Length: 158
Image (cartoon, rainbow, N blue to C red):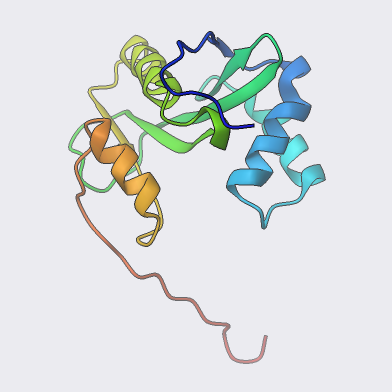
């Protein structure tokens, strides 16, 4: 069911907890369909218990409608000059709820967590062909700093 974008959206942002894992992983699989439920369930269960990562969820009275996965990176992050860097590993809003300010609010809440952790910069990445994500990032104040093509190959004898 498509919602009327002119209607105010009633949602809350919270830190994800154990009770949110099933709904969270379902959204993760929508964002990254090549992943498996079992692996991602365990992965996100571990993430919930580490201090250098955080998952925020957007929730309505009827369930989860979005999330943002964050980490604090101290390694080199493309286009940044400080450390730690608040890094957006992934952000997702269910399609019927897009364009209602949920992603923008997830980014704001992420910024607050980054500032609490002495971050001066926030970074993210997306696939070069993901125009929806690129437009969202630019609308959220990010600037494009690089495009790369990655390569790999197996070593002989393996």
